[in-house]
Length: 426
Image 1 (cartoon, rainbow, N blue to C red):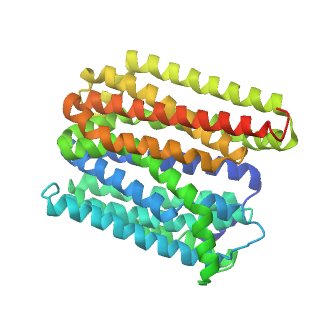
Image 2: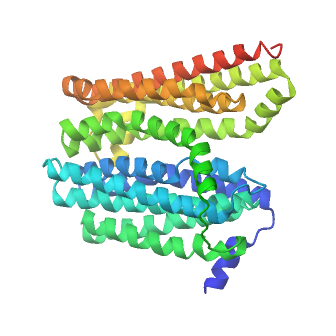
Image 3: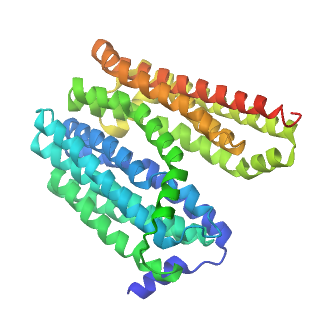
């Protein structure tokens, strides 16, 4: 049985085509995981449980990025294996354990202060554990992609995401118990991981660990800026949710997450459009074709602007009725909040694109002020906005933070390009 499953993952008539298709499928599944859960959860368990899951997932996402530590891009591009798989494996186990402890301590603080019930406390820990396992699976995903088999990695990831999701949904429908369903999600995630990524590991060098202090520190040093950036950007994006969790109730949390879901659609669509041009963008910069480089960057920014305007138009017209029907909740009073969030989604897509462009021109370190500035504003303003204006305040805060982030990243890009004028004629 397991041998047949392994063949299904490994067999491919066209590796390049399968890599594209399956990577798109697993990317959509990963992005839509929480949305699908919330749709089912609200209909089976109601707004309160949907709100509990929303904040648990937001905390779990931070745990995921802490566990992944920004290593994927570095590991995938380490084609000469400066660090071995054993080195990456040891490093990932260490970061995943630290990330899990972070999630447990965060939940325990809420439990001690009375903010979280025992049930909510356990759900946050379980969701954090699921996200730690996802971060651990990313180690294998990176290994398979590093070895030229993105198709295998994406197939395994799609399977690992789909099976637990289906079982969790069935559990919600049958039991109507959020805690039991989260336990099911965790257990099936472990099973899916063992019968996909771990099962395939021997085909790509096997499972082994190696601890070399200098290499361990090298991986940490090289990947820390990537980790810090993704972690801080996620924190900034989730800051309104944390403020709602502290000030409002779980029902408000659920409603905010319902209207927040289309934000991911903007980013996903923008990524599908600009991902195919990344290699050309890097080649234009490295090869000195600066006019085409500038043209490509400006054209992509216009595309993101166009997608954002379309999203705003949908939000002003049919957005709330469609989302209300999807989630089974009356969202008629949230039109303005949804519209504001669509602008924020466009700013997030722009910020993510600018990160890529700044990375192409090798100016990653100049992004740090943008991350820190946005995170500081999020920390200082989140509670005030939500306390004064509720969900509309959370939406306005999100858009303001994403706009600030995009503006500072744009400034970093301009600085990097101007800096090059002392070396190249641009």
